Length: 413
Ligand code: SAJ
Image 1 (cartoon, rainbow, N blue to C red):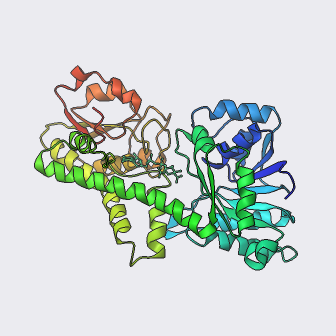
Image 2: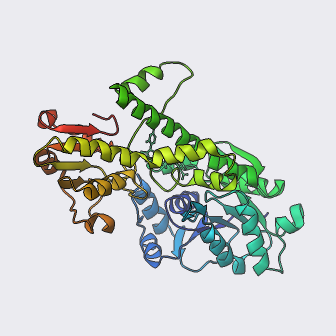
Image 3: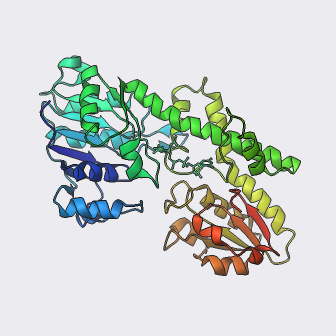
């Protein structure tokens, strides 16, 4: 493979944009591709279209230096990194259509010697499918599923692993699993990642890498489900689950996660279903964990309804809408689900607080809700429901809470 001078990142979302920026910061010419014009425009102005610590300064720097630019049309490059969404359809069926579309979009500009890496979390077999799609459109080139080590184009899967809120740090420091469709595919991908990654890069097969990534998120989901189940059991016995878990975790081989109102985001609440869909008979524990976590918002609603019934004019302050602490990401947020369920239960006035956003999503404004200031909501409410453990909420005036019912779903207060 020739030296890498130009990398194209397809999909400028939560993973693609920071990845593009860190490669550009190492002096590589990076061309970002996205189908959404407003995203392309913003990136070309050096501005991220979502919140992530330190990304704005980095993006401004690399765009001003002419190292990163964005476009809607793929252009030739040495390496293509694909970071597009992999959601599921009705019935929890994986939807890899964005990966397929990305493969079709770059196929016309591919050349012999190129490397294509799939970063999106994907069901097993997706990397092979990507290779086949590109091959269909480019019969003049050979791909690893056809020619193995002799192929013109190399294809690999290197699943992203970064934690939203710490992306720029983790994209550099995390170890990476690099699954090549052949050994040389993996080796070439490692060379590319080594430009920015300081963590270890481990070569394996594409299928193993696909399964490893799904297993990482299923591991977390199952362990959160375990914590949530313990919390429900503790409730029936009048035990504080967070205190109990803190004590159990003093054992040197025990590390229970934190219970909460459910699991959100575009990763952990989605990826385990890819395993279930691929082996429904075997994946019983993984499915049960998903169902336990998806059922948590309804458990919170039951608690809120029970408390509200004890009040004459319930005014319910719901604190936090993001899917987790200190981020502005509302995707698949269990907090939003809880708010909807509380409004549907029609038990009193509902006030919603989210300091990380400037407006509510349509799904909540349609319910007649308005964003309320934290202090106003807490002083007006007689029932306060903490849904997200944002740092901003930790400065609450305890005296203000004294004569109110408080439901703390995160064990933060
Ligand atoms: N949560 C709990 N209890 C906990 C931990 C988390 O209820 O003890 C909830 C959070 O509040 C949130 C959800 O789980 O709603 C997921 O949050 P998270 O911080 O665990 O994970 P994500 O979705 O932000 O990022 C995950 C990470 N995967 C793992 O930690 C195994 C990240 O490294 C992946 O790159 C990312 O998914 C991804 O894109 O797949």
